[in-house]
Amino acid sequence: MSQAIEPRRLKRVWMPIAIILLGAGSFTALVLADALEPMTQFYLGVGLMAATPLGVILWLLFFSGLDWLQRIAYLLSGITATVAVIYGLSFVLKFDGSLGGSGIPRLRLKESRTPEASLAELRIENSGEVKIDSLKETDYPQFLGRQRDGAARGVRLDRDWNARPPKELWRQPIGLGWSAFAVVGDYAFTQEQRENKELVVCYELKTGKVRWTHEHDVRWVDTQGGDGPRATPTVVEGRVYTVGGTGVLDCIDAAEGKNIWSVDTLAENELKNLIWGKSCSPLVFDDKVIVTGGRGKKYSLLAYDRASGKRLWRVGDDDASYSSPALATLDGLRQILSVNAQSVTGHDPKDGKILWTFSWPGKMAKASQPVPLPGDRVFVSAGYNVGSVLLRVKQGSDGQWSAEPVWVGRNKMSTQFSNVAIAHDYAFGLDCRELACLDLETGQRKWKGKKYNFGQILLVDDLIVVQAEDGFIALVEANPDEFKEVARLPALTSMTWNNPVLSGPYLLVRNDREAICFEVPILKEEQRVPRAEK
Image (cartoon, rainbow, N blue to C red; front, side, top):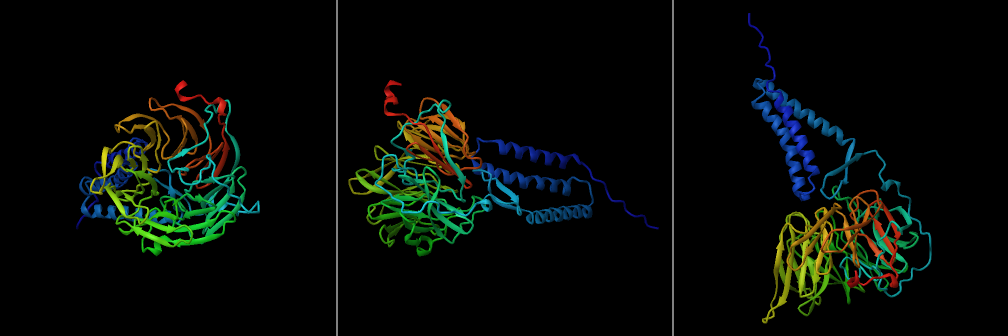
C-alpha cells in the first residue's frame, strides 16, 4: 500500500520578512530624501516597488524549500490575490493628481465629495462695463509681470509683518487650474475649470466679486498634474488673450468678456497636445500674439494677428515646452526667445525666422522662462537633472548668429515648475526644493536656504515673496551674501503651484481650490532707505 507524500514546509521564512521590511524602510527613506531630484526619486521608488515583490518571488522559487508544484501554486495564488486586491481597489479609489512636485500620486475615494463639487455657481455680482485704463507702474498685466521677469514694480514692502501684518481682504473657493492672476487697474483676470467649462474670469481686485466670465465647453484632464487650464491671461489695451489647456487661443473684450476671436492652435497646425497640457501664456506686442506649438517636431512657435486672429507665421522643428515665449534685444536686434523640448531658439519677430539655436536636450518637461540679461546674455534653467546654462548671443561679421555657453551648471538652479528672479546680477530661485542664490558671472552657488518645495517666487525690490508649495507665504531678503527669511504668513492650505502676484499693496495668491487677496504693508516714500545707507 502506497503512502501519501507529505507536503514540504517553508524554509528560511526570515528572508521574505527581511525583504519586505528592507523595501518598506528604503521606500520611506527615499520619500524623505529631499536632496534627490524628483524624477530620480520617482524612478527609484518605482524600482523599489518592483524589486520588493521580485525578491519575495525569487525566495519562493529558489530558497523556500518547497517542491516545485507547491512553489507554482503559491506563486499563482499570490498573483491572483494581488490582481484581485488591485481590481477591487479600482472600484473604491481613483487617482486625483499628485501630492506634490515629486509626482507621488494622490488617491481618494471615488464616492467622496471633491472640492470642485463643492463650488457654488459663479454669479455676476456687479454689472456694468469693466473700465481698463492705461497701464500703471504697479499693474501686473501678464505672466510674471510687465516685463515677464518675475518682478513687481512701483512698491517696496514693509518687512515687519509681526508689527504690521498683511490684511486679508477676501478669501473664496476657485476652480481647478494652475493659472495665475493678471491685474490691471481694479481688476484681476485668471483661468479656471468648473465641471466641463473652462473659464476666463474677471474679478474685482479688492472684493473678489465676479464681473464677467468667458467659457468654453472643454476640459483638459490630467491624472498626474491635475485638471484645468495652466496658462495666465495677458491683458493689453482693453483685450484679454488666453491659452486654454487644450490649446485654444482666445481674444476677449476686457470690458464685457465677449469673445472677439478664437483659434484652436493645435488643430489648425495638426499638432498634438503636450503630455501635461498647453501651458504657455500669450506674448503680445506690436500687431502679434505669439504662442508655442505642441508635439509633432514642427511649428514650435506660432504667430497670430492681434486684431483678427489670422495666423501670420509658424516655424520650428522641435516639440514645444511648458515655458512661454519672451521678448529680448540681443546684440542690437529685438527677437523672440523660445525654450523648446530639446533646444533654445531666437526668432526674428517679423517672420519667425530662426536666428540661432542652442541644443539643450532633456528627457522631461522644461517649464522655466528664458531670462535675457545685460551683455547679450540669456539665462535658462530647468529641472529633472538638466540644471542651468548662461548663453552669450551674438551676430558675426558674416551675419550669422550664434549662442555659446558662458558656463553650464548641470546640478545648479534646477528649477522644476518655477522661474528665477534677477537682482544685483544674481539669480534667486527654487533649486529643486530649496531657495538658492547663483552668481551669474561665475555660475557658482552663493547659498542654499530653506526648503519651500515646488513653489513659486516673486521679486519685490530687495525682497523675495516665496509662495511655498505647502501654501504659506514667506519673505526672504534678495541678498547674495546670506539667506535670511524675515517673515512668514499662513495663506493657502493645500498644494500650490500657481504664481503669486503683487499689484501695488494687493497680493493675490491662488491654487486649484482657493484664492486670497491680501493688502500687504508697503513703505511710503519717506520711509524708504536707500540701499547704500543700509
